[in-house]
Length: 264
Length: 209
Length: 134
Image (cartoon, rainbow over all chains, first blue to last red; front, side, top):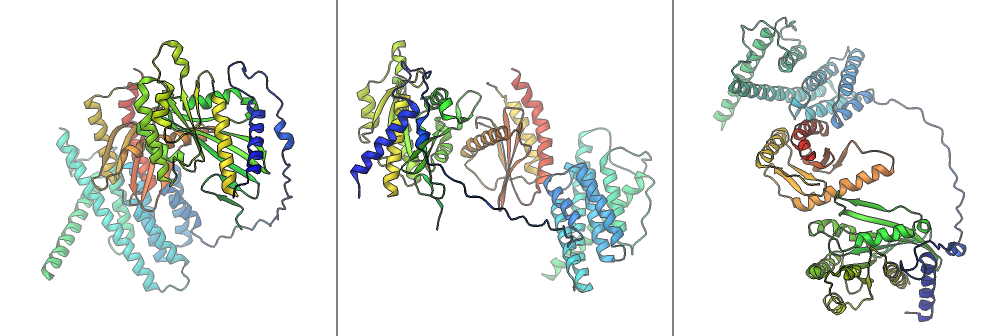
């Protein structure tokens, strides 16, 4: 229903308000110098703000329910941005936690996995395999499950650990493959053969071999049942170890594939 | 009970007794939409008291929108806030235009009166119709004012479209109020603005009842 | 401001984007100027987006966000990134004139992507910067 009287009143009110604000006409003649005092505000309702009562609650002390909360922060930070600061903080936190959990073998293994991944990222940065970060997150999540679960049986924990270690191994294989193709590519490109060989006594500066060395070293640390961690004096030794590792892994894979094929 | 809601038209805050009115200046590229707002901003800076936001390219073409908000005070118990927007006129920015049109309450169609722009005006108006339809709004119903801009070029000897052609091309069916204007000089910029504000606010009030 | 890019330069740009980003799992990457014009556009062959609208909106978005930064007293933001359920989008400015936009899934971590983008940007700068002094 349209109330024409009210509409007319409204229209005139709007018109008056706009005239007050903008004046009668436009630029010609009026250069804006004659600014009228804004009468419009005189009619404005004064909107009264109710007093807002703020209930002050006592600041709760920060409870550390999760002993891994600091590590969690680091993992989330890595996901967000990869800097030396974050990575150093991460590795340092791993070190601290290793002390705290030195009597819990399974947790220790988890931490070693994380440490190894952290070292790899730190050394390789943008050259790290893209899947590294997913695995880092996954290993951390499983660690958190294991640590926070109060009644988880040992067997269950081992199962979870094994699953993560397998993923880690898979990553290692992919990393080795990636490195191998990169090495071949470089070989094809330049005359100087950069491929590491047994006869190379000198230590090279490139980041690649040290990553491989630390990756292999980490592997050794993860499996205390196998040969104890050897110190690597020469680059050549490290590379030879890696070569052998690749060969054994590939052989194992080939065998598994064969089994799968035969069973079909 | 809701204390604020988007009415499909205008944003009404019942708690604060405030109405926000969105008016979009639409039209072909380089037609004078931004110039309209710049004129208003320059002229009424002291009274308006708010800043104008522009998102534009290095070449001074509107890239996203220009935005100029101001209060016009209390009308019928509600504090009325006007938000003026322009859209980027170039054809390639259609997705952006559609975005800026969201929630529009009133439109000023700034047509370029230069003879060479005849086709562009028509295409732009059609584009407006399509983009409004995207939000289930009809160009025949939405408050709208036509502005035939750049009349100042006549004295420079540049061929302009005569009024009857402009009206026939753009306003034959819509039958909206129109103004011949010069955004650069300010001719009828304010008249256009006053007209669209009063049309839009009146329309909102009717719908609110 | 105007610039021209030769075929060799465009090829080089595509190489960089392919190697650093597409080969590392990024779904789609495009290099645009601040007006929303597409200079280079690559994807991994999976999905086809309406890149023209994307480019215009990306430029507008970046422009709007830059305006917001100035309002709050910042010169610019160091991270412009939108996270979706499956797809994410990251913006990176290259000089004052260009934007690199990457669309990637959740198989790539943001941190890693930022490293790769930073690498790409360094290389792209060498091609793009000389254009601006013309």
